[in-house]
Image 1: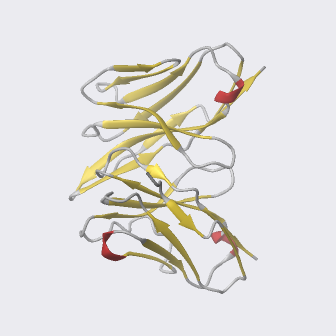
Image 2 (image 1 turned 90 degrees about the vertical axis):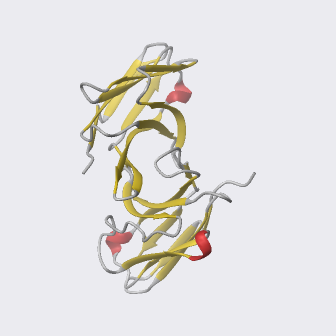
Image 3 (image 1 turned 30 degrees about the horizontal axis):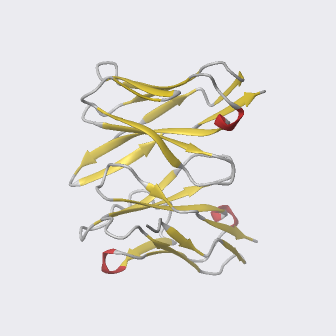
Length: 113
Length: 114
């Protein structure tokens, strides 16, 4: 079946603009995660959705970052007033059961000029 | 909260040698430990995982060992090949407040030289 998909694959924006990144998890997966990966670095946890529970936002770096998950499926990560340090690959992952195997999407490479 | 330490950060071996990557975790309640491989420009992919009720698991040239008492787990790759070159991430599950999420180590960049 289809894996996790993300769009766009690449996004170039100007400093100060808002961007929206989309994630389509594997159908039926209840848990969805967002990570940020700067060049050559590890996986920085951003936010986690589990079913209908309130999301775990503990990893969001500032109030410019927000995310929502509509209908328990598609998720959108929004970055307002982008800064150059926001440039990174944003990875989405989903899992059938929280705390178990996560399947990653291909990522969105964000470049802020 | 959970903290996962991973060593070494870089590892260089000759083709055919073995490679070992070690991780320690802090939450004694963690019960699931996956390893992910990320090739250059690609997404991380699960290569092997272990649950807390076993001490070792093997899959061809890859094995993972777990020592719950010491709170550390290791990835062993035998007969390394150039295609094993990648960044490897360990992780441990953090549970609490109804949440179960994976905490990742910082990664190990493995280079296998022909």
